[in-house]
Length: 220
Image 1 (cartoon, rainbow, N blue to C red):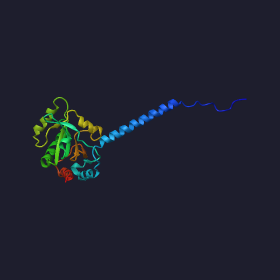
Image 2 (image 1 turned 180 degrees about the horizontal axis):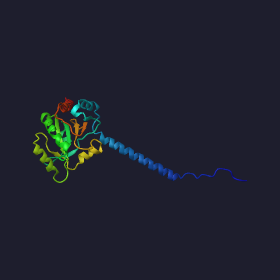
Image 3 (image 1 turned 135 degrees about the vertical axis):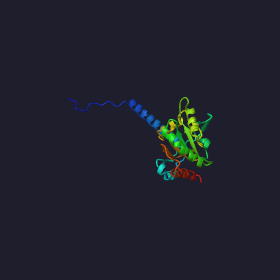
Image 4 (image 1 turned 120 degrees about the vertical axis):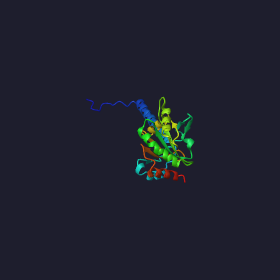
């Protein structure tokens, strides 16, 4: 008599199944750890939607490209150097709202923007506010080029701070805050980001002054 039963299917290899599940579990754990780690790093500050909206609503006309953020990014630990080579960070300016402007002497839009930033600094720099320029000329002679540009134009209130390592700007690119120069961060007195401007702007206008006054007004 012929055997019409279905052919016997071998049982799955349990060891292989367990290994596959274990590898998948490890992958999920690593992904979760990476996500949580990045999220924690990106949330150095509380979310400040209302403050960001205040800046955003003031950003009109010449400052229309300024975008309110307030998503929790903080920059207290962002490090650079002063004109003497001393290490400083955003934390050293705690208590002041900041316009942190990243620029380079080879960047034509940066150079064009500097007179307006100097005028804003001259009018508004105080115990409550500061325009903080950070130069990104890298390589041999970079710092001298930056100093030469500032001296040549006799800016009264744009001191020389520099990050020749480019690490500060690399962080901005890594966190998708900036892609090119110039870029300006609007920070509160705790070094927390409220807005970002990618590209140059004519700050020494009623539009630019409205943004600065809105920022300073948040401290009142």
